[in-house]
Length: 239
Image (cartoon, rainbow, N blue to C red; front, side):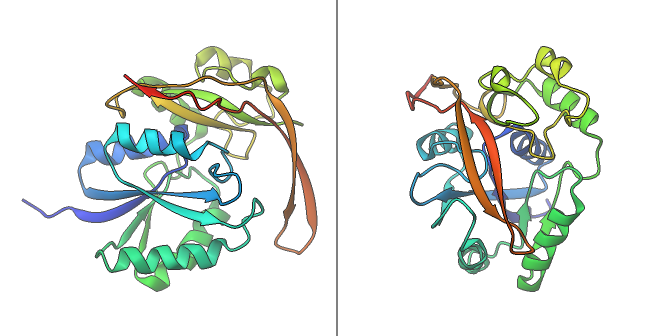
């Protein structure tokens, strides 16, 4: 029997990440030894998706793969490269040569990952890569994985979308200018049940809050992004 490659899965806690991991575990080519998640050191929420750390840990526990937390000092991703370099050094000692992601078609992100990881002798694996968003969302719905909308980009999706179940009704309600997978950041999700999980994660969501973040762009300029966020009340049980 061919020995499986050791890999780390970069876990966001959302739908694309869950679908990609589900496919990897089914195909059985890689031995995923850890789920790597970046969190804001101040809020202890995951980067981008803003999922509370205790829910991220509950997801990992239910999936049955250890979680590896990378803490970032601020929400604008300052210190990301330094923290990830440290993580790569750690996993290279564990003989990991593959990092797996759930990206779909954003070439600049894939190129960035390859630029940073390949010099370390680590390959970038993208199970969903170059598929159409419509194909990915159909795969997700067919998988049986359950997910909630927890963040929306306020100028694309109003507060009525936050907190909804990611189902066909939600997809059919999206405006024409919104990618059905939210690949351009229009919405983010949190998965909580389905065949990827051994136990369902029970939680409650509060009323959507309007939040703003100042993000430093590659050109040095600061841009303000506005979001609707349904924060988890962190009531968690596995059953």
